[in-house]
Length: 257
Ligand SMILES: Nc1ncnc2c1ncn2[C@@H]1O[C@H](COP(=O)(O)OP(=O)(O)OP(=O)(O)O)[C@@H](O)[C@H]1O
Ligand SMILES: [Mg+2]
Image (cartoon, rainbow, N blue to C red; front, side, top):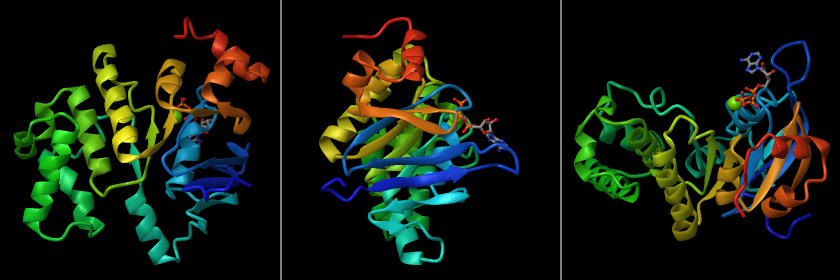
């Protein structure tokens, strides 16, 4: 048992989409407050399915998701409200994750309204401006529509939206893979800054081990729905114990450091 209560934990989660093969098999992992955990594994390993369970978007067939020591349970309105504010998703595709009919400002303010975090219109507008600045976008971006922005800018808008309710943990599913290499570095720096200055933790799904090593102190390796290895990122990258982790590393052309 760790001394700190994890912010979010998977306890022996199992999941299947239908009567066939399970997609997740007794997956356990925990993210401490302020910690960044990388989740890697081949396509089809179950990474997105695991994130969906951790977000409460699908129900496990076994095990449970625990938020600050409380099992996620739709029947507990108080826990769910706290959870929806504290744990925010960022998705892969910044083109489909923003509603094209809403201005950028409306999109960013939406979680503030629905979660009743920030009261009146003026307070919300001020918070939107603050969030746009935090992700290095001009405050007047608020009045424009998503189609006026590039992929990298849209991903930063999506991150601003995720940050709006002051979350403590971001669950990000390949948040950089739709972006150009040049833009990717900016978003990595943004995540690093959020972790450093605001103590926001992250559970990052990525097949790019360079990104995981830049952002995550710890990583877990998922193979066919099972965690096969977990530990400090540096250690896993230099001394992988499991054959599957070695194979994953071997498929990466070059690693820094
Ligand atoms: N909606 C669905 N219905 C049925 N099976 C699904 C569904 N979504 C995913 N699967 C299956 O579940 C398994 C895990 O998929 P998942 O999307 O979680 O993998 P992943 O690790 O995120 O892969 P990728 O790296 O390609 O995103 C795969 O075998 C996939 O085909
Ligand atoms: Mg996926």
